[in-house]
Image (cartoon, rainbow, N blue to C red; front, side):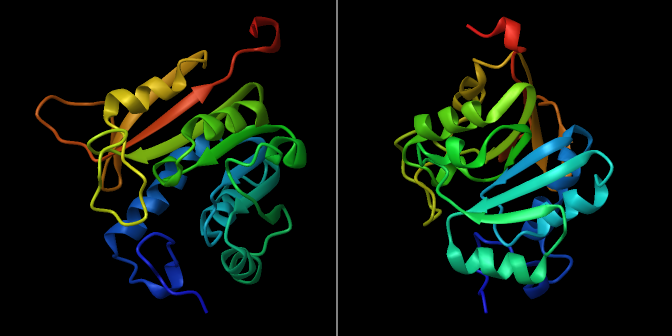
Amino acid sequence: MLEWTGERIIPKELKPTNGMLLEHIARYYFAFPHVRGRVLDLACGTGYGSHMMAKDRKREVTEIVAVDNDADTIRYAEREYHHQKITYRQGDAVDPDLPDSLGLFDTIVSFETIEHVRDESAFMQNLERMLRPDGTLILSSPFGRGRGMPTSEPFHVHQLTPAEFAGLFTRYEQVEIYYQRGVVFEKPREGIRYFIGIAVCMKRAAEQMP
C-alpha cells in the first residue's frame, strides 16, 4: 500500500478538505477545456488526474498515456484508477528514448514535475518532441528562489522564479501563464504573492517549424 509522502497525492488517504489535494485536483479541472485527442499525463502519480480527464473529456479524448517513474505507483494507479482509455506506463521524463517509445500527442499535461528534474533541458526537449504541431502543453511549477538555489522541499531540486518559469516556453507560438491561489487561477495582480504558475502553450504548426 502506498503511503502519502507529501509529494505523491493519494486522494483515498486524505481528507476531502486537504489543501494540497484540492490544489492538485483544481489543476486538472483547469486543464479540462484544453485536453483533446491523444493525451500524455507525464508524472501522473497515482493516476487520479488521468482518470478525471478520461471521464470528463471522454468525447474529446481518444487515449491517455499516463507515465510515472515509480513502479509501485504505476501498479497502484492501474488497480485504483483503471479506465479503458488509459494506459499506465513506467518511464523517466528525461529519458532520451521516451519520445520514440511513446510517440506523438495532441495534449501533454505535466503538473508539479519540473522542480524534481535536474536535467531541465532534457525534460523540455522531450515535451517538445512528443507534442504534435498545433498541440497543447499544460505545465505547472511551484515558485521559489530560482535555479541552483536551495529549497525547503526535500524532493525538489530547486524552484523556479516566475521569470524563469516564463522563459521555459520561448519556442511555443502561443503562451498563456496563470497563477494559482488555492483552487483559483488568475492573471497576476499587483501586491499578491503567488506560489504556483501554470502555463498553457500551443506548439507552432508544422509549416511554421524551423
